[in-house]
Image 1 (cartoon, rainbow, N blue to C red):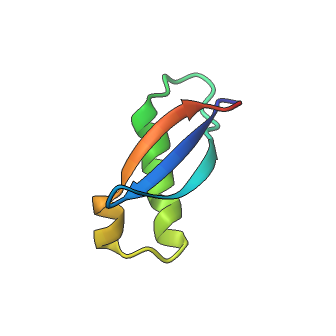
Image 2: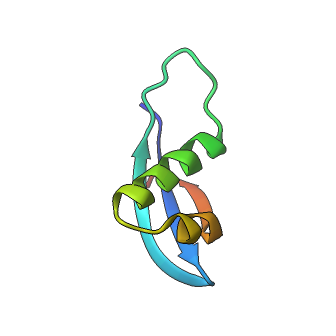
Length: 63
């Protein structure tokens, strides 16, 4: 299954990385799909909607 690392930054400060696995099999997967999942995870982790909106993301291949 496609896995990528999403590095999250807020106000130019590194917050954390999420390892995102998407289970789509017969559909195209775009970097934005991974970013959307990371935003959802940030909200689940307790970040405010404003912080999630301001966050910046770097998508990279899983090592």
